[in-house]
Image 1 (cartoon, protein in one colour):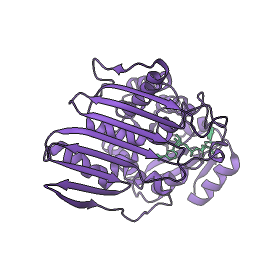
Image 2 (cartoon, rainbow, N blue to C red):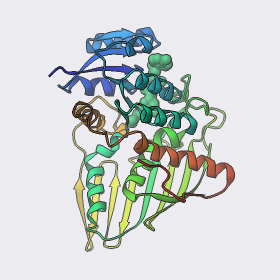
Image 3 (cartoon, rainbow, N blue to C red):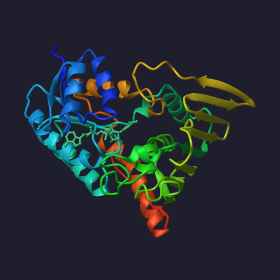
Image 4 (cartoon, protein in one colour):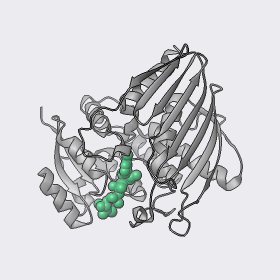
Length: 344
Ligand SMILES: NC(=O)c1ccc[n+]([C@@H]2O[C@H](COP(=O)([O-])OP(=O)(O)OC[C@H]3O[C@@H](n4cnc5c(N)ncnc54)[C@H](O)[C@@H]3O)[C@@H](O)[C@H]2O)c1
């Protein structure tokens, strides 16, 4: 069987993780990379043995390209995804779906009107062994009812990080720590905690005032439809990238994640369930190690013609929570969902 033809749009920071992962997947062949910065496109093309482009529209015309990865700034995800879906390409976009709710909905609509191709959203941390293990504990009911969850992201981004054309601005990034960094943790919280019933939160710019328009700090209180409560805090104003912390308290035990260390407390005994595994990708540790697993899973679904589980509606869930924290912060009001925030 011919390998699946792949193109990657955007050859910036995250692209190396995608390119390395693709190069290790036998069922796929990287055919093209695109960046408006010609030297970046050419560097990646040389490294991975494919053709460099500066205009993604040219790549969309190539019949041998079936899957397009979107690795550009947030404001470019929706227009690129819509163009690619219309051109009959499967799309795997980096998180978050878009920079605004309107743009994300346009993507969802485009995916719905082109059911012959798939839209996948990168949330690689759902593939971490520790995340998979936590999900199994929740679903099995072994520890009884989930009572509450806590998510903490205390990271560091200095002014230099925001020296790009799109970061730190509402119009192009769509927000700060919430939409860019902590969306992964909110995603795990809603994946593990289930449908959210209401959320109240607020944002502030504590350490990067005058450097960025967007927030560097946020917190939220979530009520889940199951009756569980969630507490969430995120900041880019710490001095280091501490391991992300997630805590799930059940009737009959507790699970604590610290980075990739997963602990279980049951019957008064604390045990280590999972530890970090060696990285096979040249990635920053706080990005996690699971891009390769998600990318390969997406290709398997594309090849077999099965609907990918981390699709548009699924990727929209954490995005919607981010949008709702912004709205709650603006209005000072709790946002209540009378029906599911998003349907699959
Ligand atoms: N999943 C993760 O853990 C993770 C980690 C880091 C970044 N990301 C996401 O990856 C995406 C990219 O982030 P980044 O840090 O790599 O950004 P970046 O700014 O480093 O790279 C973006 C690249 O897109 C290129 N570009 C801009 N306009 C283009 C166009 N019209 N056509 C082709 N290329 C164009 C830029 O020249 C740049 O090289 C974002 O959505 C970000 O949130 C995800």
